[in-house]
Image (cartoon, rainbow, N blue to C red; front, side, top):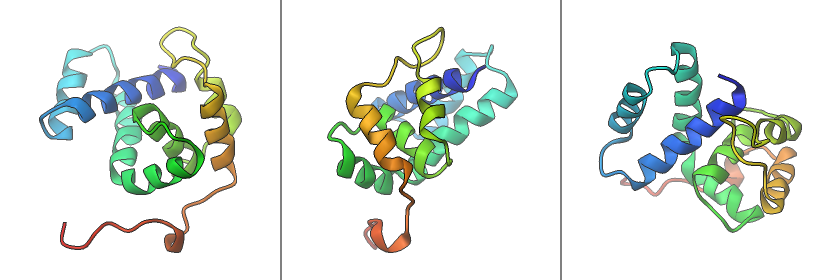
Length: 134
């Protein structure tokens, strides 16, 4: 799979997790079981994207909220690619070109998000913290 196809699969899997009533690991296992054509290395990459978003969801949503209004699986994956995985904006735009098995091209708002996050990092003092007791 190309990196764009892996990103598209991660977006699809996150959308399923968001609407599912089961734990994320069960949904992911079912997703991959139904798509046996996805190789082991690709499963690792896709799972990495998904679990990065799940681990950093609160801070990703905070950063997305500073740059855009649409918060969902696609914007979370884009933000995670930029902020936690260190992708360059050109790489994100290139993987979202709408070609076979890749995500559709970025909207203008998504381009602003990607370029707005390009110079950002996630310093601890500026990120929201998870409420205690949860």
